[in-house]
Length: 176
Image (cartoon, rainbow, N blue to C red; front, side):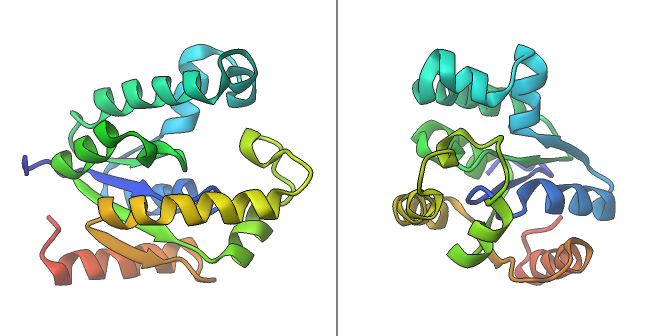
């Protein structure tokens, strides 16, 4: 593995990647990038609009391109989109260029955190809990395969969870 001090956060929508990423970046003195926000910033339109115009396939292509660019950074925490692990290229790039942390959350927590969020195109149908379950069932093996470290997010506040992650990283010898 190339020695880069990058951390890539993966997990389902609502797992806390953005919130925790900011807290970790603050604690470790690293830069923070939210992949979804970066795509919005670069395109000038919402993710929902990209999905509407280009479909999920178009959005995923943009996501793969962005990850390929951002993994070459140093001293960065990247909060990926929930589906970033769908592309084998992205999984390999993240594993080879930093530490990948899977933020695991149970279906109840994911549902509660995403229930009123209108910015997640995949969860805008009639039955978002069924969609969340299907996404989780399909993606969980990919998250586990990609991660160097799995963290259960539970109900801890982001700052306490960030401290716990740093401790686990240090204990495992993954950081710095």
